[in-house]
Length: 291
Image (cartoon, rainbow, N blue to C red):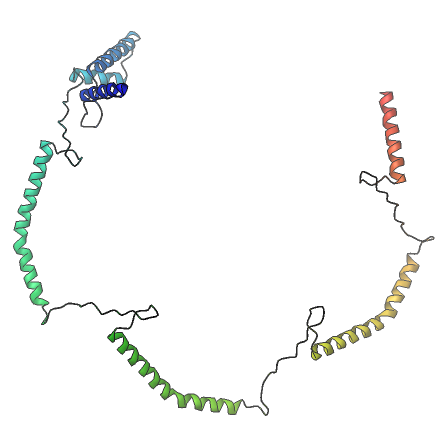
């Protein structure tokens, strides 16, 4: 707690000594200004020693502190905090606000007769014999949760449905005459209708063929058998000629290798692979020995 009190007091003193320029930056304290002057004077001296002119920043600050030797030329404005927590206006701001509102009141006073005259002319031009006002509609909620129609909406709906019924009554003879002519032009000797096919589910879950599908399948398979019978002599003659042209002295066939699975799950080498491995490692050993 003691540390906090000391820290707050130190910060209060420090902030009390700070000066804010109109630009928003803090003004240099006298000791900072003096240190800056000494620094830039040394820079200027070092530049002169080698025959060079001081750089722009050095010139700027040396000229600045010649103009403002104290560095700190601004006095802080008196700041008051209102009970609302906002800052009170400075005297300059308060005076500017007062002048602004005075001008506003003056302009309003000058404009009032003009506005009143305009309103009078407008009301004369657009006046109504009776007050122009709306009264809110009486709203009724039906048991189903919807709003009941207002009398105007109900009347409009009734008028609409009456017109629909009238138009329908006028169109009915025309539609009937059209249907009569259409049926006469496209009439059939017997009723034109489809009857649904009888569906049978087989024990395997598939649908059984309808009689039409079964007949079509039988016809298709009969044609396939007929074509196959016609093609058989041709295929046999082709095979005979092919075998004669490419015949072998001994039967040309492969016998599957004997496959053995080792206890570790891998396949055992065939005799050919085992012999090849032995020859490979023998050559490898001989080459290693010679080297």
